[in-house]
Amino acid sequence: MAAAARRLICPSANLVDGHRAFRFDVTNSQGQTQAALALRYQGRVYAYLNACRHIPVELDWQQDGNVFDISGQYLVCSMHGAIYRPDNGVCAGGPCRGQKLVSLPVHEEDGQVWLNVIEE
Ligand code: FES
Image (cartoon, rainbow, N blue to C red):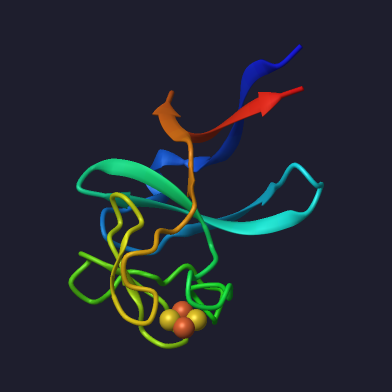
């Protein structure tokens, strides 16, 4: 029977609005590990698979979580410059315009950021 659970990503204080994202891993249904990012934008926390929709490389090629542009309003792929909206993952410009980052369900509680997971 499936049950809802949560997995700790990081303390809420690690995510500053429009600044460095927190890198973590998730495991997909095939048991493969995938890179992911948690970030804060306009006060809310979001998380996405760290895979550009143009070519599935990590957005932060230096693996440092720096995916926001200088204005803190968009996420930028460091490979060819695709820009994504932080609040819904939609590519707003670049070679994959109109496509979306894969979002992950997260929430904040008790001063922590949690990944919502379904356990089989
Ligand atoms: S790989 Fe991200 S824009 Fe090309």
